[in-house]
Image (cartoon, rainbow, N blue to C red):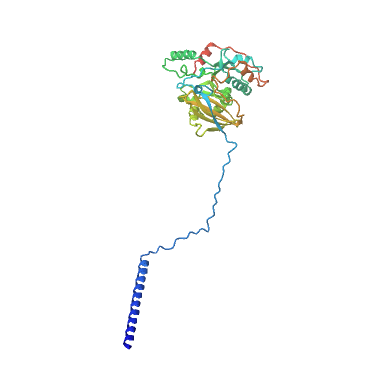
Length: 393
């Protein structure tokens, strides 16, 4: 019996030892696994913490833009593509032939006969004609010239010419000089005189005009009436015409002002405007009378009978062809007009409606000073002087 008890005690001890050994093995294996895992893990360190104590909180708000009530709105207006050959700003020279036609001409002397006030400009004869559009500013300029100087001897000795007359003058100049080409007379079809926008001055006292002395007043002030000295002495290489002190051209006040103050001839100005298309930066300036303008260029659609020209709504504007490749739009920034007003036409176009009786333009200039000195009544001229100056340009 005692033997059996001893045996059971021995078996119990063996089982306890065995269980203890197994537990130790399990604990050892667990510890080894933990050690292995830890040893394979790298120390990545702690993440840097940015100091935001000095950073201001920026709050972005959603902003809804309100339309500018003063913004100019443009609309496309159709013009005949052929109208690029008409208007105050057509460039006529050796490279660009005059193709306009439909001139609205007026006799200077006949228009003077219908005025109730004094005028200080006469034509060489009753056949001396210019564009009706430029008669009023011509009368105003010569009245003011008389007020400033007391002179009343200006005569227009060269105005509108036909192409046939220009051919006669050109051939006569070649015969007298023996040259193959002329720098004094423009090619037939290429003279501004054929457009009616140009005129040559002389005087009834000397039958000569050099633009000096008291007559320099005209050079310095003609821009105020829309005229330019067309062939300046320092621009002969560009104009290809020798200096002509007596030759003036109408282009309109804004453009005459810009050319005069920036020492540009007409060719240079036309090139400048073409660098300011409607889609780009417009040419903006203010003239000597504090009138603001914007000028821009629109290419003609030569593949179509019509060209759509963007023009401002609610603003006064004028439009002219350049006789080359498009239209020039002149915006009077400070002059508002009714948006329903009739759209301006290109002066000289068939749709311009500017043909009226000869008295209309004359009456529009009857606003001069009544106390001006007596005008010259000498309408005569010497044939020799007339031929000499008429052969220019």
